Image 1 (cartoon, rainbow over the protein chains, first blue to last red):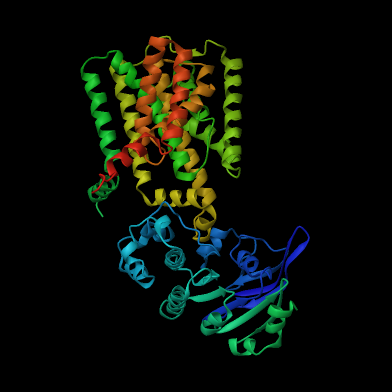
Image 2 (cartoon, each protein chain N blue to C red; image 1 turned 180 degrees about the vertical axis):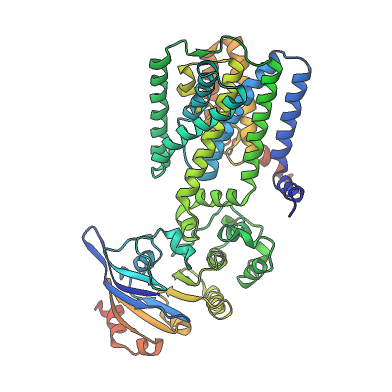
Length: 230
Length: 316
């Protein structure tokens, strides 16, 4: 997937300015930057919730700009949200089945529930789950869609150390066992660097740096972006 | 999976709704065999409004769309049947099939224009649409409306047809409730944005459910016109739009069982109280009942019953 020179404005305020990035066919990609840098806006543009003023988002050569979110999802781009959006009156299992009703009673469903440690609570209402379990369920739900690219918006946000560890393991497993390409928006840099293969740094709606976690960690720009406000 | 296994699964999932539908059906059949009496007329009234409230329940509980003008497809169904029978001289069976389809086309098309509105605004838009139909029908056919000069079907046949209509409607909604489509609709109601991100075409399902709901409301109207042999402008009146809402609210909007329960209670109330205490007092009592239930039991009477049944004994 390629994001080419995307610009998005909100009533005159530029949220994204000519942002480009390339998501390769394998790996975990990090998207970092301080609050208001345009990370979530970029995810919203990729999955079709927002239409950019300029630029293209290409998936296997096809431009996704202008397509409806459900069409983009069916083309293989799934996502989670900053604050988990549950179908709270449905059971955990039903939440997953909404994504893919064909999974009912299958081994794959059991595997997904097992992967995210949700087997014991599968009959509980989503509203009865704790915050960490909700985050897990959201991830399980998007995995069930068979999307090839998963956009995860702050998956570690609000989790305790145990939850963070569990979530990181799950993200690694999704990437390795299920062969999914993952784009992670995250504030927790150390944790993100521990799983990411490549990282993009956004600031003020612009891409200011990109590279491997090692390169980004040693980059002067990262320090400037987070501590000096650039 | 065989049809019987699927049916069994559906029944297991919604035992109460299915049982209630069965009990009602048996009661209606018993009423028929006891003779075509006043009881049958009461049941026909009940069935018409039960079908109407079930159609509203389908729309609201399964897609979160609010119609404050469901009298529109109900009335269009009734008027269509009368026009097909009395003016176009259609065969009754053809008329019975076409009338709810016309209601679905009219109700669905009006609904289509409101699909992107927020529920409250959508409700108001549909209320206005039903009032437009009220005035158009008054201007076009006058206060006397359209009546069938002669009874085209025997009383027993009418009762049988209405019974069949209600059974088709309730079982269809019951199957939607327990199907994969039902699951997707529940998800759409809870969170449209999350549903879209999972590949669900929210607009398509909202339109689909609007047409289906209008079709069933049209079936209710068809039943109503069939048993009264008459349709006039009052069928589009506001009480006809609010009655199904009250029925669902009183019974409980979460399940088809609640809708059936509310329909039975309000229909009996609306059928017998006017005879005893007059129509104005009936509406006052009905209004108080709705407010009271909303205040004390926000989940409806079914919710209250469920709570009472699951309440653990103290100290246990």
